[in-house]
Image 1: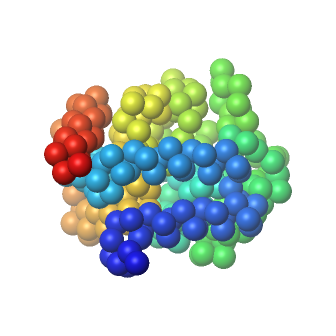
Image 2: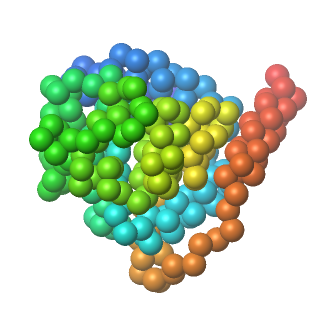
Length: 248
């Protein structure tokens, strides 16, 4: 029996949440595959938030707090794993919430919006096609965004994102913050700030830091280089691999 406070027990709980999300029609089957890939990287990272990830989280918090029009982009995986945290963060940073899917269909969008509202969201964008616009030069369904949401945002938190939209959002003049456990992915490499951490664990820390910084009214950004951030994440993986090899 795995102890409740063991990282592996927490990982299994996250897996159960995602499966439940799939059964409720929130998560696409491809989302289950993507999560499995993320689990593997989390294992290599030691299933904990590194000091380097904490620095990225603090930088992200500063960017979100100082943003004029922040938006949190939500897909099925994110809604299944941390709906409550999304609402908490949105309230702290005064952000809009928008549903945006790679494997899009209107029924799934409405189910995700409903889950967010059950957890306290007053308004969820991305469901009404009347207010939709397209991100230029993007072919996937994620190009369709809300006029008053992602389309007009200056800073966007896009957890569990795909690389194509990250690139186009940046070319469209947006600052992109993402959660990605794979420091070598196109999303991680393209984003302005990549938090190399499990989203369930990292979102809680992001909320804590945003709340703390907002109270202290700190606006000055710390020095941050995302390329260096990703290099440090790779080093963390190598270090953990070496430790495991020694004990094998």
